[in-house]
Amino acid sequence: MSIVEAGTLHMRILVTGSSGFIGRNLVERLGPEHEVLAPRHAELDLQDGEAVARYLDDAQVDAVVHSATKPGHRNARDPSGLLEANTRMFANLTRRRDLCGRVVLLTSGLVYDQRYYSPKMREDRFGEHVPADEGGYSKYLCARMAESIPGAVELRPFGVFGPHEDWEIRFISNAICKCIFDLPITLRQDRLFDYVWVDDLSDVIRRAVVGDLPAGAYNVTPDATVSLRVVAEKVRRTSGKGIEIRVAQPGMGVEYSGDNARLRRALTDFRFTNVDEAIGRLYRWYEARRGELKRELLLSDK
Image 1: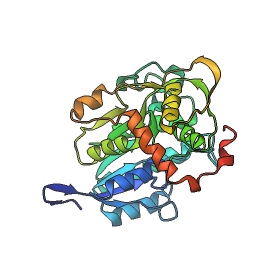
Image 2 (image 1 turned 135 degrees about the horizontal axis):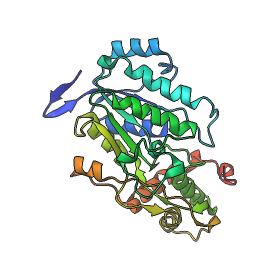
Image 3 (image 1 turned 90 degrees about the horizontal axis):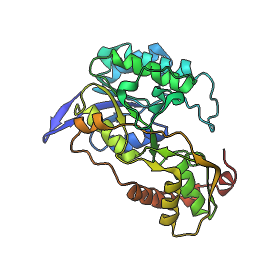
Image 4 (image 1 turned 135 degrees about the vertical axis):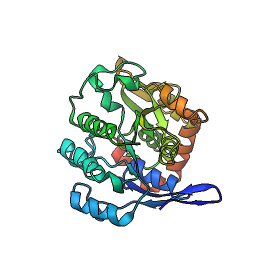
């Protein structure tokens, strides 16, 4: 359980979804300061309520960070059953609240219902509409469950990018990998996005775990929105190459952004990483792992 050494709070933290993009980064970020428990699916099936209860009883954790989700994106092996899987996992984790310690839940901007987006969505817009898509609806229901958990913090990032994401489909990583192989950067349509660097998201989660964030829901978005076309140009500039940028459809798509004023009021000292700096760091990360990338998987868009 929690101990204090040299003025630093050391906690035992259960991170779910540790094999996924955000979970892997979380483990790397929290590991140096805390004892992180990161069981894989083979070690803990979150849809098995009794197994979860036994695990929590044995582990005696100080906090649970729930980043596990069954993916429904276009590269998912099995996008079916999202509602059942995602809501059951969170319900199983939190039905024994006495064993969870502090609860930090990751959802996303999908909780606001993508049919009704407007620029810079505020947290108080939550509940105006119920998402029609299964993935958004499952996140919405988990957010509703979190409202009844004393001390729980729900974090709503919109776009997240960084190491370990699916470079076959995630735009910034995909653009970087295409540049590395001298392929054109492609996007279906330009669109304004709130992209947060995964290290920044991980730091906000860390602050939530140690109690710097009061209970409630927070958009985790940077101060400046950026268009996909501008991101592509930043990636091209970072590469130093004359890569072509192709936009399939003219005009601008629906903006995907969230107001971060509530987070700013709670974490007055927090600084988001400049997007140019983050893209440079991610470009170098992929360059160092070029041998792990497969050019043929970049030749057609999914």
